[in-house]
Image 1 (tube, protein in one colour):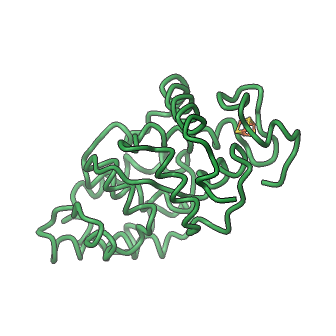
Image 2 (cartoon, helix red, strand yellow):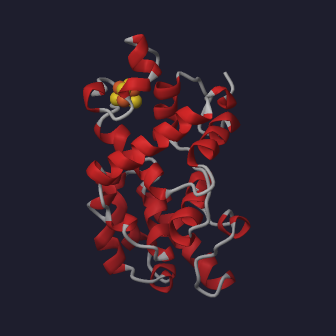
Image 3 (cartoon, rainbow, N blue to C red):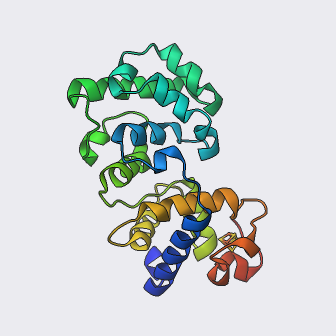
Length: 223
Ligand code: SF4
């Protein structure tokens, strides 16, 4: 089923409910309360393939140890690995962080770039991370799809998607976020999956989307 099969009024309702829920129940992680491009960039690399809770345990330590892109570019890889080891994939993550910082220092005068073309050159960000840096740090509206968002789309809209690279999912995110693509919508979706729409036992009775959720209406579904 194509993403455009979801009606616009349903999308508007879902957007409003998620943002309203996020304002009451969402987590205010330190990378969500700043527009500092360096902090947002670091957070997005740390957040790949791990949870926000896990990142919250190391983020402040990381920033105080490597407060600027220059300090990160000059760091020993083993020192970066040590701080990010609890997140898993620590060797790859540390390598990406250091290489990306070196590219930023050498090619972008030490400034986190604010274009898609430039951000794509940085290892470790990926399509979601590039969009997240543009959206969260530079207020450039961009849709985003990661595994959590895909999971929520499948449940709420009863749609199937191949993977996070499915263009239908990105089109649906674009329509859901509308002209502004508000960060609170995306943080809300991530937190909803972490707190309520759990993969094994979703807590539908606590969910702001339950009255229109396809998964709930069916009583069970594939996730
Ligand atoms: S109603 Fe249940 S299945 Fe649907 S989005 Fe909410 S928690 Fe997930």
